[in-house]
Length: 100
Image 1 (tube, one colour):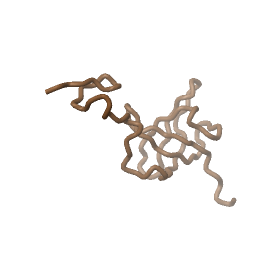
Image 2 (cartoon, rainbow, N blue to C red):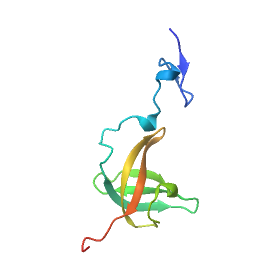
Image 3 (cartoon, one colour):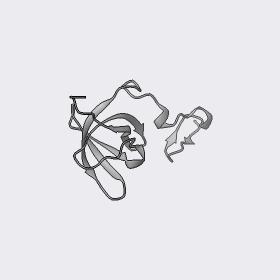
């Protein structure tokens, strides 16, 4: 048996030219599924968490993924991407009020 090391330093039996980055693997949701939530934590370094409305799950994000500037307790809409450390929010926008 031949053992390879993937780009994250883990052992695998998949040759390097056949390995797929975890961010590129399809998630269980379609790529266009949007989620909503509230910014529950945001620090001065630009890292934070969004508490998802439906599951109360905390999803990590960085301000580089924000299309609109966000702050603590903002309601947001976002996409979820798979990363080496779990799910991560991307394409984050502020949720528009319902009266628009």
